Amino acid sequence: MVIPVYCEEKGIELTLREVEKHLRMAASSWEIVVVDDGSSDGSWNRITSHAQQVPQLRALRLSRNFGKEAAVSAGLEAAQGQAVILMDGDMQHPPALLPTLIETWRTGEFDIVEAVKSSRGDESRLSALRAKLFYTILRTFSGHDLSGASDYKLLDQRVIAAYRTMQERNVFFRGMVSWMGFRTTRVPFHVEPRVAGDSGWSVFGLIRLAVVAVTSFSTAPCTSSRSSA
Ligand code: UDP
Ligand code: MG
Image 1 (cartoon, helix red, strand yellow):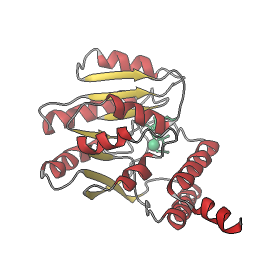
Image 2 (cartoon, rainbow, N blue to C red):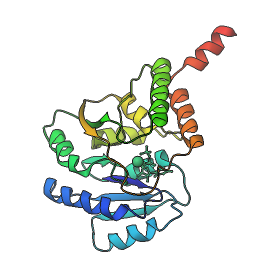
Image 3 (cartoon, helix red, strand yellow):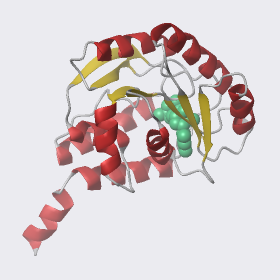
C-alpha cells in the first residue's frame, strides 16, 4: 500500500488500523508505505508511533509539502510489492474495498484495478462542477476520459516498473496510468465523507494540477501555435 498524507493527524491512525485489518485477511505478506508530505500538524508523530506497533509500516517524510502527486511518486518509488495499492489517508477511499481489488488482481486477467467513483460523496455543488469542468477540458484536449477516475488503484509490479521509467517531474498520476495502457478493469465505490480535517487542495494547487494535466496530455497548445506560425 502507498498512502500519501498531508495534515491528517486526527484520522490517520483510524485509516491505518482499518487498512491493516483488511490486509491481514486478504494477503499473507504486505507492507504499507506512508508518505508524510510535509505535514505541519502532528501527523508524523502519529504515523511513527503507530509504526512502532506495526512492523509492516514504513514511514517516509518529505522535507516540505510537495503536493499529493509528488508524494505518490515517492511512495511508488519505495514500494516493493508484487502489486501496489494507492489509497488516500482520510477514509474517503473505503478500506473495505481492498479485498475486492486484491481478488480481482489475483485472477491474473488485469494489471490495473481501478476503483471508480459511483458517486462523489458529500462534495459541494461547486467542487462537483469544478471537477466536471476539469474532466471536460482534459477530454477535449487529450482524448482521455478520466471522469469518475480516482487515485484509489491497484497496480501490478509491471505497471510500477513502467511508471518508474517515465521520469516525469510534473506528474499527474491518474493521467499517466491511463496513458500507459495495460489491462485495466474498474470496480465502483461510493466516496465516503472525510474522517476528519479538510481537503488539502488549495484553488491554486488545483489550477496548477489542471495546467500540468492539460499540457502533459495534449499537444493542442503546440498544434495551434504551429498552425498560426
Ligand atoms: N495529500 C498530500 N499532499 C497534499 C494534499 C493532500 O499528500 O499536498 C493527501 C491527503 O492527506 C489525502 C490525499 O492526498 O490522503 C487526498 O487529499 P485530499 O483529501 O485533500 O483530496 P480530495 O479528497 O479533496 O481530492
Ligand atoms: Mg480526501
